[in-house]
Image 1 (tube, rainbow, N blue to C red):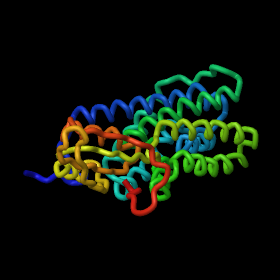
Image 2: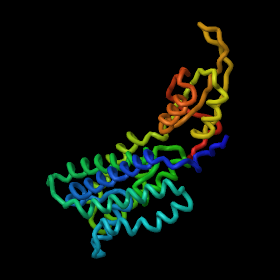
Image 3: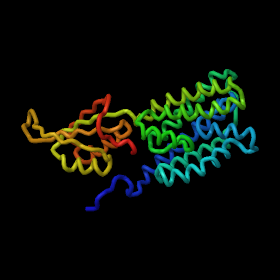
Image 4: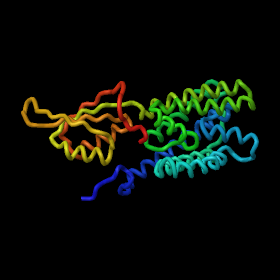
Length: 287
C-alpha cells in the first residue's frame, strides 16, 4: 500500500481544483465589484495591494487593475518559495481574476454617501477575501503577510489585515487628506470583521470520536488532517463492545476535512464536536 504523505503529494483532483478556480473567480469578481462600484467612486482606499494600486494610479498612468497585477508578481515569487506552491498559485489566480474584472467592469457611482460606499465596499470586499482564505488561498499581496502573521500568533487574521492596512492608509493620509483616510479605516474595519466571520481558522474545536476502527482512523488523521490524537479505551454502554474514544483538537477550518475522513474510514463512528476556549501545550499553528 502506498503511504500518503501530509498533503504535499496527492493525486490531482479535477473536481477540487475546479472548485478552487471557481472560488478564485468569485472572489476576484467580488473584490472588483467592491472597488469599481463603491471604493474608487467614493475615493476610499481598498485593502492590501489594491489600495496601494489606487495610490500609485494617481502618479502612474496605469489602471489600478494592471498595477495590482504587477505589484503581486514579486510577492508571488516569494510566496512560491516561502509559503507554499498551491497556496501561492491560487492566490495569484485570484489576483488575475481581480485584474480582469477591474478592467471589464465599469466604474459607477451608485451612491454619493461616502459612509454607504465605505460600508458596502468593505462588506463585499471582505466577503471576497474571506471566501478564498477559507478554501486555502488569498487575495495576494499583503494578504499573504497577514496570514503568515496570524498563523504564527494564532490570532484572527482580520486583525493583521486591519493593522497592515492602517499603516498604508496613514501614509496615504499625508498625500490625500485625513478625511479620506478615516473613511478608508471604516471600510477596512468592516472588511476585517467580515473576513473573521467567514475565515474561522483561529477557532478551535475538540472532536470526541467513538469508534472500533481506531487504528484506521489514526492513520487517516495523520495522512490528511495532520493533528495529534489521544486514544482512550471505552466500552459500549448498551452493546458492551470494546471501543476507543479518539480525542483530536482541530481548527474550525479543518472540520469539513475531518468529517470527510470519518465518513470514508468509519461511517458508523459517533462523533461529538465541542468548541474549545483555550489550549495549553503543543498545537501546530503553521498549517
